[in-house]
Every structure is written in C-alpha cells, then in structure tokens.
Image (cartoon, rainbow, N blue to C red; front, side, top):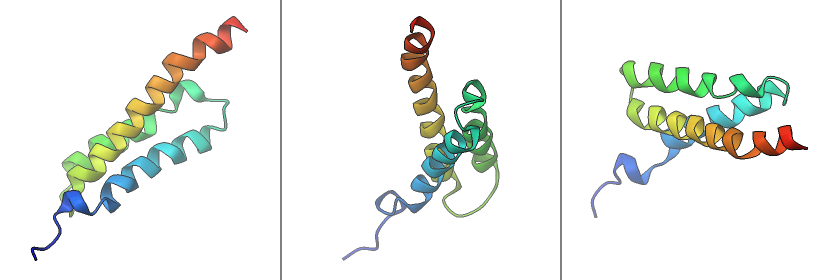
Length: 82
C-alpha cells in the first residue's frame, strides 16, 4: 500500500476551517461584518509561510472565509428586513 497523501489527511484543512469557526465565535455576533477578516488574513499568511501543508491550511481558511461571506450575504437581508 502506498502512503496516504496530504489530501487524504485533512488535519491541515480542518485547521483552516477551525480558524473560520473561531473567528465567528470571537466576534460574538456583535462584529459580524469583520468576521471574514481573520480567516482571510490567516489564508494569506499560511499561503506564504513555508511549513508543512501550508497550502492546505490556506485552503481551509479560504473556505472558511467564503463560508462566512455566504452566510452574511444570505442572512443579513433577513436581519435587516425583520
């Protein structure tokens, strides 16, 4: 059997996604417009720094940033209309 590739070990990807979740928790609902900034900065920094699986961490953080943006685009109109 061959050794698992980085794509089959999602720890780095999950680390980036956890950063997005932590960003939402840290804003506590009060600073929701700035919630995507932390995962976006983490994605940019992780993409540049040379450590093992840095691109997977950057990808996970970018996915978290996009998820937060989609959440805001979908649910902010409901917040403003209610």
